[in-house]
Structures are given as C-alpha cells and as structure tokens.
Amino acid sequence: MINPAEIDFSSLPWVSLDKADELPSAPGIYFAIDSFDQIQYIGRSSNVRGRWKSHHRYDDLAAIGGVRIVYLFVQAPELLSQVEAALIDWFDPPLNVARRRSEDCPLEGRRLKRLSASIPDRLYDRLEKLAEFEGRSVSSLVSYLLEHSVETKVEGYKREGQHPRSPQPQDVLIRKSQKADRS
Image (cartoon, rainbow, N blue to C red; front, side, top):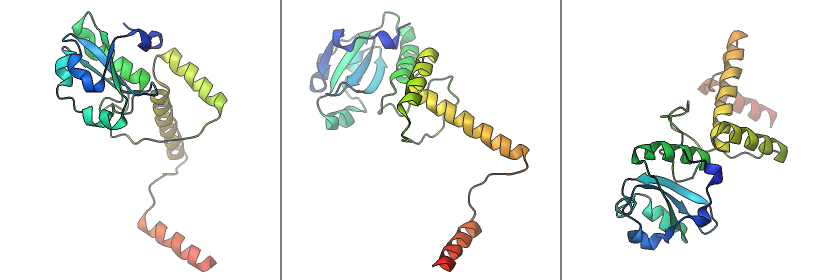
C-alpha cells in the first residue's frame, strides 16, 4: 500500500487542468492541486484520461484557477478504490465531499457539516501526531473524537436522569419574554 506521508508530488507527472486530454490512458490515482499546492480533489480511474473527458469537478477546479492534475500509476487496478479511500482520508480534500470518510468510519453515509474551530498550537500538534499514528487525517480524527465525546456526554446525562434535548418552542418563548422583562 502507498504511504501518503511519503508521496513527493513534485516528482510525479502532471498536466495543467486545461490539458487534461494529455493524461495517460492508464489506471491510476489523480490529485487536483491548486497553485498554492493544496490538494483540492483526489480521484481514481482505470483510464485517467477517459475520466477527465467529462469530470464532474472540472468546473469547480477551473474556477479555482491554476490547477494541475498530478497522477500516480497503480500497478494493481483492483486496489484503486482502497488506495483512493486511504488518500482521501489522509489528505481530506475539500472537493471530495461524497467520499469524505473511509468505509470503516462511523460517519460513513451521514450528512456532514463543516465546522471551524480555533485550538491552541499544542493541542493541534498532539492531534497531528495521533492522526499520523492512526494513519488518518487530522479532520477525520477530530470528527471521530468529537462524535465519541458528545455521545459519552449524552450517555452521562441520561445515567444522571437528565435528558439533553433540542430547545422546544415554549423554551424559546420563555427566553424571549425574560429578555423583554429585563429591558
């Protein structure tokens, strides 16, 4: 299997997005990388050139501008889907929303929301090390840890006889009337 941490994108062949018709007709994994060297999309195909003749992300990538398609040949085409899933989990490209998590992830098949949070550098460094140890991306690890933490917290409330729930309409009305009383 390919170790994502060891991929040297500068040593791999590539073509600019507008010359995708020059891609090889061979099985491989491809990476759409922008001008800031950020991976925007990862895909796979038994015929990379054929796949790019009508790629569903072409317009999105063209709007970003300066995108190049870097490709990696895969000698065993039967492994393409596994290699692609591992690379998507590792690099977590923003345009891979449909395949955001691997098959073994508890979030598979659920609608996902993007969350942005600021955390101390020290915590991020620890998350990075843990993610690398587990062979996944930081965002995949954080999603897992957050879901596990929330479920554990909810279970704790249930054991204590409390039941966290969504606000009900009467709760909202009470809060509004309390605000009005204070003014």
